[in-house]
Image (tube, rainbow, N blue to C red; front, side):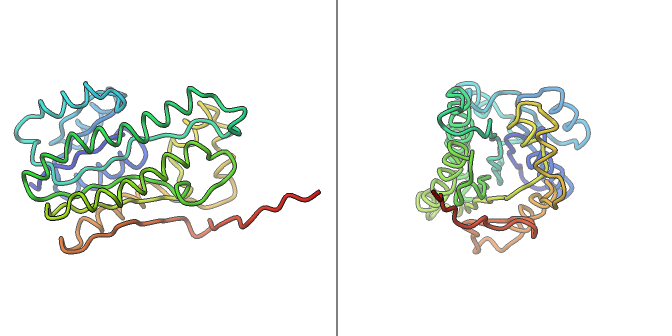
Length: 248
């Protein structure tokens, strides 16, 4: 049995797919998420997993849970900072300020909490691999991405800066920035409106959660002397929209 992978946002999408892929390849798992029923179901299905049922935004609960990890799950080799979300696609003028704060608290502060809590374990072991899930929205603007895109730009820059801070620790850091992918992402973004969510994916091809899981495993299996700094991945059907010119 290999060491432990710690996965935030493990109850669906990329998090669940990576959990399944790493479990198949012999890793123990610590699965963190808000939906306890899904965590328990995944644990029972995969085996050799420990669940943490907390909201990534709850700093005190998160640090306490990591501090209380059983000894057999403290050999954390991989951290997947996957918990994150987009809410709404309105312009800044019409958007909900509470949605902005939820995205900031989850996508930025939650990622920082998990990283800060687990880095000492990796540093003590002089070994580790941190994956931060960004988005193409962190590099390429599109209408309605406003705060969501800004939080993912933070993920990109924080990942690069973190690489400097872990020099000499034998810890790798990779930001993975997916493009359009069919998970629960759009259902959450449009607050349960499945018609709006489905319209995003109609008549096109998109990434699957399993695609990202495969990329994570490929990176993990590279020699430890190799670090992929940032990896932007889109379906072949997606490209850049080009410049927009307002005309009178």
